[in-house]
Image (cartoon, rainbow, N blue to C red; front, side, top):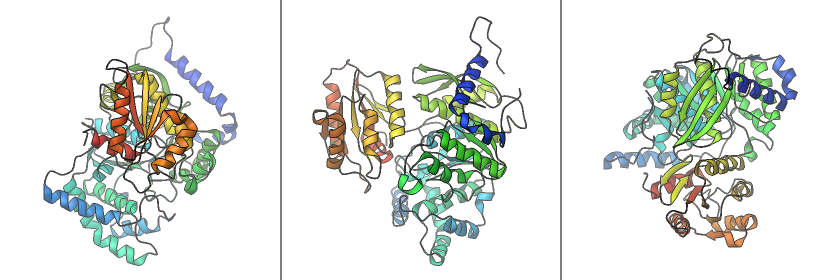
Length: 504
């Protein structure tokens, strides 16, 4: 615990009490549910680089990796789903249930899952635990999705892991109504690799939803729920409450649930589920949270309230209030994993926590890839993510003029997404990425014209041309004008822009 401040300075406990009071006022309808659930109220080296591997330098390895990628791509894609864990369970059973070989932290939610997973991984690694991390989608390389010891799986091991399980995949394919999907095979690869390493703990992000997501064959010791908003409504439900019902499926008996701030109806569903399975709940704004944050060069300085107490002077090299809240959730998840707040009334070593957070990276999330003019990439792809990105870029950069480059997927709420950026984009260049899911640029432009007006919209079907046009528009303001470019709309758009900007 840190020393208490002098009497004439604000007391951090007062700030946290204010946060608790505000949260209690915000969620008055949850009192009955909370009375039936247990809550966590405490009684008083990190990864390097950006984690984005380049293509293998060895031509033979690159060829073999491309063969694996092609075989995986021939399966059902990540957006074509049959809501069942039957196939993945059958495959893992044949493989000897590797997912039972280690404890796990399971993460669901709508936005912030990957950043939170990377923070959890960094914290656990800093405490000298061997970690496995499984996240999706990837920014540039498929091998990013599976990390071992806080580094992406090598191309050679990725190929080896796939070849090892391929005969068993084929066996299950013949026994099921539908073949295993792209995501199901990758999930099995991750779980098998984690067992083979072996890891001390797995950090697993759901692909979509929760109950029937392929990852949900683990019993996470800690279940993390990042903020829930509307996305994938055709599959998960049309309200936060319905979506929360699907996502609550990762909460298992006797687990600890780390719950980010949620809409009241979504929080209600989560807490009801916790009561049903006798899970322990830690809620942002009640048991943990962000006490203070200040913009700093290259990121922000935070004081976090964890389950065990206060953690001051934490530098997080990521931009935006949403990342500060992700950091609070990640810290609480790691504390819960170590038993802080239930078995132990203590804080984790502050120097280790500071070192871990200072080394966190989250590629494609408010990532600067060029200066003069500044080009920022952000993988926001739904209205809630766009709102967070708009706030973050305004706070962190203060551009005098901002040009947007937007390439979105056709199945998203594109209007809501664009409306979130309308106040901050002087102009928007609409384009498309290489995915078959990408929205046609002319269709995207039609929506953009309705939101921005025709004089603020340009269409460039090719992403490289769109980037060039946007940079030229920003440069028209002059070298020292403070103009910038934000590339957004999809993880795929950001990944391809990253390559084009020389980050691959």
